[in-house]
Image (cartoon, rainbow, N blue to C red; front, side):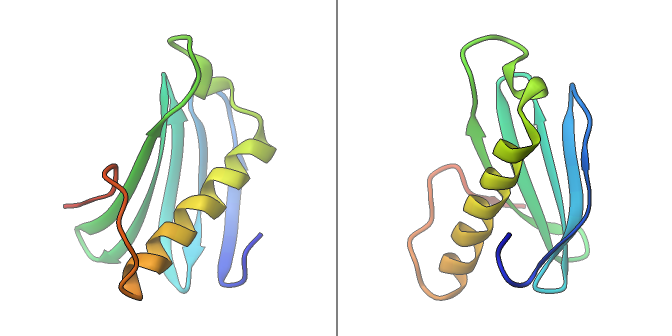
Length: 96
């Protein structure tokens, strides 16, 4: 896993979930249905979010292997950090 990412737990099916921190900020990962998403809480009630489609079937994301989930967490963390340094944002990224 990437430096600065601490995983408190990961596991489950329908949904696959993970919690931990990214650079000291809490994150939540969830894969269910046909997509996965990672939220990083930059400020209370104001998460940064990245979401992508996954699989072809209606329940594929909920059965995602743990190793693949870790790869998606790493990918989203890279996007989060690139955004902070003036990098481009994906169209799937949202701020709430």
